[in-house]
Length: 328
Image (cartoon, rainbow, N blue to C red; front, side, top):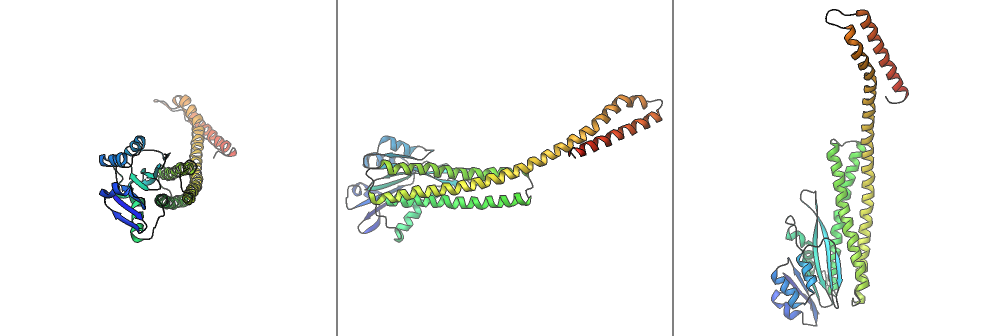
């Protein structure tokens, strides 16, 4: 658990034992970053800070969508950050819960998928920790610190989107060059890239709505901090627009690839149909007359010759007819 006291003298690290005293001081504010929910955490949130039981319960369980609850003097926020699995086939929702008021910021890393490490979950808060230690970040309020953390999440999402855009560009080059070897595997790659982009876009859209509502419902929000959350709304709008553009481009690449593949299949089916049309009359004639001209005791050579010539003429006529109709 990381505990920071931000007073007139600047940020300073404190221990978890100091939290009871720090929350009652009026000459600054406190930031508590909690790695995971457990019984001591529940007691801290309920007894020391007096948070609503429903909010504490939300911290104990996974929340699949972002949310905001405005209480009398503080906000409860749930946001997510995307994390692509090691195999690249799944995008994890890494949850960050926040209690923020004019006197404190409590960040709590929500329940994690076993495949996601705690280090990954704390990436953004650790970055802010380093900025506080180095003096590069001097937040004026808990809301400003919350803004810095969520802005770091947006930057991570933008970097992920940029990486996906690079992957989409490489896939597009393969499509235009016709270099894809395994159509089934290549189509899986296209849809996997779409899934990742769609996940990032979904997070951006939903979190944008949360911060759009925050500005409207938080009457106690200091006027100096309102532009910060307006900026977060703008950041998520921009991220959504970038993701939408990449999704539209990927959709065009996928449609072109599928149309070209479908056209190849259609041409192949047409040629198979021509082959069937050419051979069907011959098969029918030979099945009816063949047994009468070729028998065990004798063969009717004249009839066989006439029959072979007739079947050859029928084949040539059918091929010419298919050619005239553009089927071959």
